[in-house]
Length: 83
Image (cartoon, rainbow, N blue to C red; front, side, top):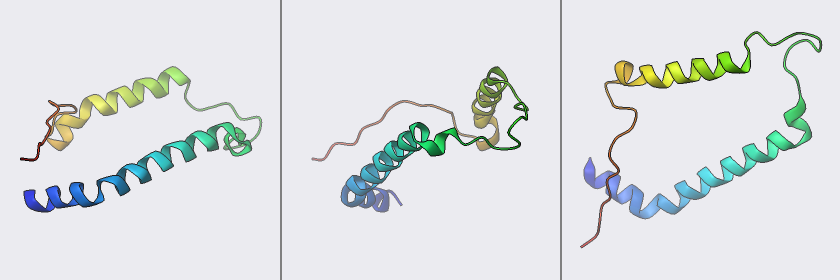
């Protein structure tokens, strides 16, 4: 399994990075384009949750992730060097 992971990162690492960066910049484009101003729901309807409520929900989900997955939410950064 470790050999497959090493092969994937060595051979397809650039493709993975390119797809991630392209997706990121596409999302930024969508936010600032006309599409980003589309309101979901009825035009005069108020949001169900405030911005602070959304932030609290996202924080709680990230805080609960280690208990649900059994993995820490962040860990030490490890690097692999070639010899």
